[in-house]
Amino acid sequence: MGILDLMLGKSGPGEQGVEGKSYTLPKETHDFVYPVAVHREELEAFAELLEAEAAAPSLEEAGDLQAAFDGMVDGRSSDIDAGELAERMRRPRKATEPVIETWREGVERDIGVVYARTDTYDHLLAFVKLCKQRDEDDDDPFELPESFQRAAALLKRVEEASDSKYRAVVHTDILPGKKYSSH
Image (tube, rainbow, N blue to C red; front, side):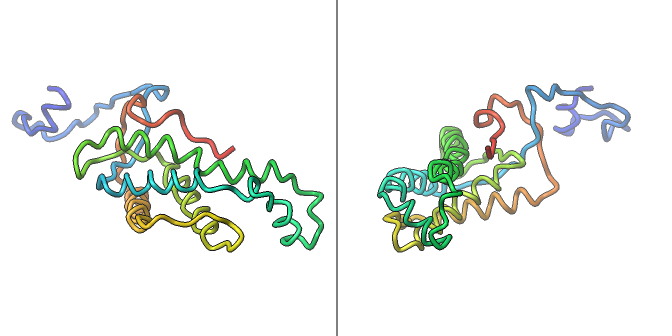
């Protein structure tokens, strides 16, 4: 009797589970994920947030990055590499873009299911925090799009799913890129 037969309720008398059997899947091609129910409009709102953040001039481009450092550290910014900080500020978007892109490609209807890896929530949260910080900074030209609340709703849904003990194992070819790196 196969596992699908058991899952679909086609078990024979006395066969109510897969007692004593286990299945080994290669770690190279499978990963633990959290299934997350999403609305297409939330994915589109998150994509819009990504586009807005990418299109807005950064402090580095505006020439204010060094001035911002000087203001933060009382003129002692010589220990801080402006280029390194600018790259650090781009990391959340770089980690978030492939996730949202893959999810948008996989959800064809108004409601769908996407798979979040164990570190997906942290990457999405870092990006949303960066956007909120940029929006609150008077010297930064970035502004949150009107659809931000729908993007925040997606973040909340991913958080709730990631807090769950219910995980699935899926083939990595349906997941965004490789495991994300915060470096």
